[in-house]
Image (cartoon, rainbow, N blue to C red; front, side):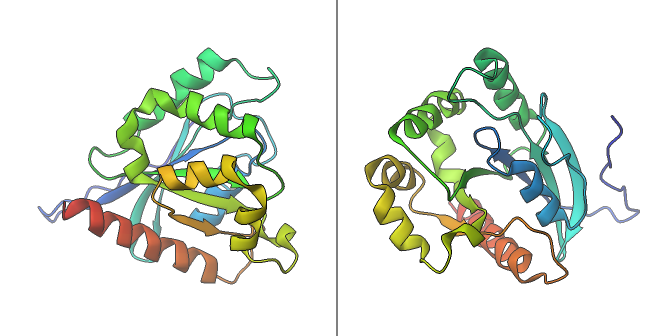
Length: 201
């Protein structure tokens, strides 16, 4: 499948690219989140992702390499070995040193089984993964007026444990693409802050 490549400029100054890896269970909304971030349909939302897909784009003055990865299943509907292999492969598709991992969790549910699955599948990335991770709660419209903090409190320890692991970095989005870029601007600002924090350490 063809993909967009980073443009080569005449200037000797290299363009900084921030790599975003989308991780999560099947049907979490990873592909539609990637489309929301890039502002166009680059990933096939609603269709099973069987291998990592990388797409590039300029968003609010930032060059991004967004990698969509296959989701895992809680019910044996996905090949766990293949999913872990692709998760490892996703890291190789992002620029070294500028990687951020977006752990995509839909607001509809998160059980103890979900928590175990996150720990199992993402363990292949090592413990250092968590310091570069951000939880993205998708389908934010389903909160129906509740705050995300109330939602987190209601879901209890399984979800709270994952948030502790990533330093309580989280954000909520509504995956439905609109002309309103407010959601994307908020996300880009978070990415910039995370990048500034990791690059200064």
